[in-house]
Image (cartoon, rainbow, N blue to C red; front, side, top):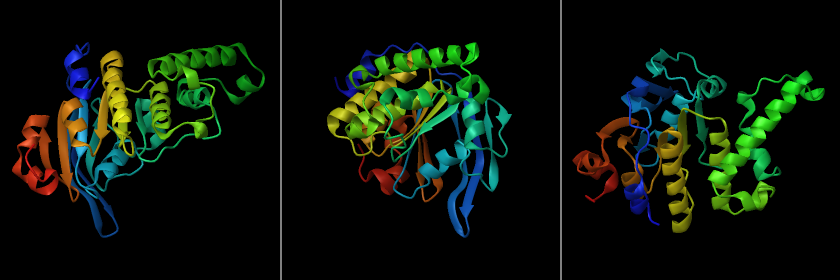
Length: 271
């Protein structure tokens, strides 16, 4: 099943809504280097929103602004209408923003199940003493976390490796586990930083299918950084294009493909 077929077969259960995240005039500098310059765009609830551009365009910097790793010197970020101000990754996660990374960031010596359960940390309320003394709350939350992790494992079709140490898995499956750990946090907004980097064609098709299924089955809003333009144009609802830290395009995939500035800066030729 290729990506286009997957999209054609999908029937959207969650209609795209109004903006869930708004970025207004964002500028980010590192010393004298301008990573982002006066960038504004929004992300609508339930959509798949792609951020594309050449290497060094500022894509990962923008994701890092959204989830609180970087604080912009200028501009404003609003999540569900609330101005975020000084963000941290922990606060972003508590608000329902989860992410994956370019480089796999898993606990390599832990099993698939334990890695995915680790994503449930912010969903639990048990204290250290609750865990130490195995209180009813601790046992109940552990059971709930295990049930949720098993549900995700089944959803991602990795039941046969659920007890396998992550380090022993092939690259494509490790990326799938990282997606599972992000899903375990039950995010409202999921940030995927190059989720298909380094994958072969079959692995990319699988990951595309799971991204579409996450969006379709859970209604999760997804922001996607990806270099494979075939993937981006097939699965995205809207695309924002960055080049040297500036926005040069924003709109539906078909519109972006016809944008001459985007063609000159990134695509090279009209598709």
